[in-house]
Length: 300
Image (cartoon, rainbow, N blue to C red; front, side, top):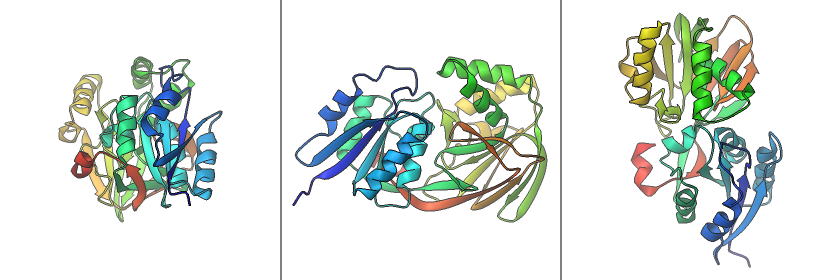
């Protein structure tokens, strides 16, 4: 009888900006042992990670490790959510918002060492209409930036900052009706972000108090502001102080409905997607098994 843990490692070779040629060898050094059987596969196209992770669930694997950015993590996590299969995360994208929230090391070797320890916790994830997200989804300016960033020829933080600045001078807000557990808010707003985790990525904290174990969604509403106020708001985003800005309101709820004037782009864990004008967002409590550091239990 084979009692070895079966682990599938999925690598997105084009995520982020770094070369990943040495990653398979690092995986073998860190994870292959007498107690664990490891299979390594590379993604070849969008959606491929989901297909491979779904097959791993069907084949009785114990865990699936995603090596890539937030988009790759989302693809794998949606396949293993609400199953006994455990998600491992090795961040190698541009923002790595979910990994940062979970206090997973940004270094590949250190993240793999954490996975080898195999400390598993249950965390929440969320749904927007029929699409799962694990970090954030948003409508408004952040969705517009996500859309334009996806069309840029290069990746990385420098490209993201340039895209953000360019779009800031073009975007003028949208009309939103936001229902939070039945309470209605109507506003012409700059951003409506629904957050399971605290940050977009790159330590930009859009919902500093968000927890992935409280069964709630943090809704960050950014009201319209001018250029001078925008600089201060940006600084507060990085320093975990955005909730203290007069142009920001943060609410919490279990069930959110957002209505817009028309079908439009939103972002789901950083990836842009055209969605209907009406968005229904809900939290799935403790629906995902994920490997984290034992010292991070009270921080997620």
